[in-house]
Image (cartoon, rainbow over all chains, first blue to last red; front, side, top):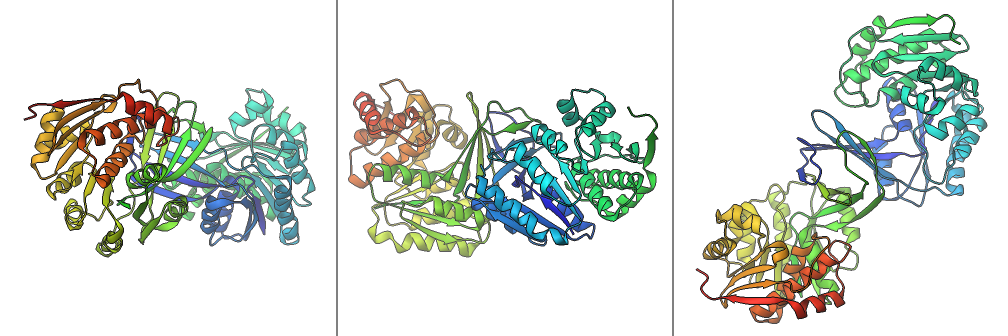
Amino acid sequence: MILTVTPNPAWDITYSVDALAPGRTHRVRHVAERAGGKGINVARVLHRLGHEVLVTAPLGGATGDLVRAGLAGLDHSIAPIRDSTRRTVSVVTDGDATLLNEPGPALTAEEWQGLRALVAARLDQVSVVVLSGSLPRGVSPADYADLVRSVPRPTIVDTSGEALAHAASAGPDIVKPNADELRDLTGCADPLRGATALRSQGAHAVVASLGPEGLLAVTAEGAFRAAPGREVRGNPTGAGDSVVAALAVGVAAGTPWPDRLRNAVALSAATVAAPVAGEFTRDEYEKQLAAVHLEEIPCPS
Amino acid sequence: MILTVTPNPAWDITYSVDALAPGRTHRVRHVAERAGGKGINVARVLHRLGHEVLVTAPLGGATGDLVRAGLAGLDHSIAPIRDSTRRTVSVVTDGDATLLNEPGPALTAEEWQGLRALVAARLDQVSVVVLSGSLPRGVSPADYADLVRSVPRPTIVDTSGEALAHAASAGPDIVKPNADELRDLTGCADPLRGATALRSQGAHAVVASLGPEGLLAVTAEGAFRAAPGREVRGNPTGAGDSVVAALAVGVAAGTPWPDRLRNAVALSAATVAAPVAGEFTRDEYEKQLAAVHLEEIPCPS
């Protein structure tokens, strides 16, 4: 079973409007809402792929109740918290999306320990632990690194900023920054240099997502670029979560790095191609998989 | 007791952000939320003034549960509905407010009858009925006019468009459009002509709110203008609901029109002056009341 940790889950609300005009009143055409936060999104992808998965997250308040109800169908184990879970509102037009992220809850030390205890309690059934998304207030990057360090299983971390820096130094198996996160953290404009630098801080492998150009990986087996071979157009929301899900499957199965990356690029591209954020069709996934262009980078450093 | 009917209540969420930039991601600085919809706002003002009040509204779904919990402290009688109550999101910066209104529930004929039954059941304790805000889907302007016609008590109606047109013809005691609503409905650029035209359709009195210029009323006792005599700066949200609340108090007490209008202008101005939407201080209300400028319009038509 793959266990995902979502330290800062959310109730994601999407409003479709004709256009967003600051200072005006808008009639929302359509409302979509669902449980979110990167670790929950990764779990949803894994579930859709047919893998056993366990969601762990802190939840509180009326919004926490909505998230819990929205997890129906996914095995989950919840740490109750006093503050209310956050909402996100995405205002989507034909052209773009405007995001409003609530500040969210502050966790007490006891609540964070409660979440850690949930993870520890199920470890004997777990092959891989995925830690994904931002940290709530009250949880420091050092707390997060402690959690990564404490897990006696392969770990995959997808976060940003100080949390990523600390987590990388805790020796996770994979960290998955995007190009912006990698540059912000390492100061390297070139993703290959940035990934190499981040790996030198302690992560066993760094997989950087480069948007439409696919993935760049620096691993113990070598460095690789993997790019989609079929045209990819659509909604990039959730593409990074599909990368993480595919990597988790690869780690659980012990797949060699080139195949992990082919699967990750293909699943990510299939997610972009699907009209609904975070979904994909098996057919598109297989077509993308057959077309992925993988190349080894001979002398990475 | 004053009974308010809110056909389309809402859970009002206010996000404070530094600036709203379409296409970007925003960190919300502060979240405020409360039960809303004009009839509920009017009831809150009446309660703050020390009057007995009963809120009636249809509510459904998880958002309906939030609204119901948010009515704690206000006497209320709820008609359950199957669809979920709507949310509104206001994104507030230093300069302006951007509103996102969800489409909200559609009521079945039975659900609308359920709301009407709640109103009928409490009428023997009621002196004035206030009907305020928009109509939900499934309820026609003719249904709304039927409700106004069926109430054997003085009625005050604050709505817009077709619902206002139909309600006015049902002979309510007062309708309270703002200048835009009055012009849209009657086609008259001059509010005095517009109010006179709307009154001729059946309303016993028309009180038009003209923003910072105060109120214009065409009544059976004559036509009046009432304007604030003290400077008014602040947040106009809820000012119209304060006008309606003051008029309801005046109708319940049988106050002459000039005094009703003085109270309505003063309470509205005090509401604008308070930093939180829909609130006011007793002190500012009394200062405004002493300063209101009231004039009778000698030959209105």
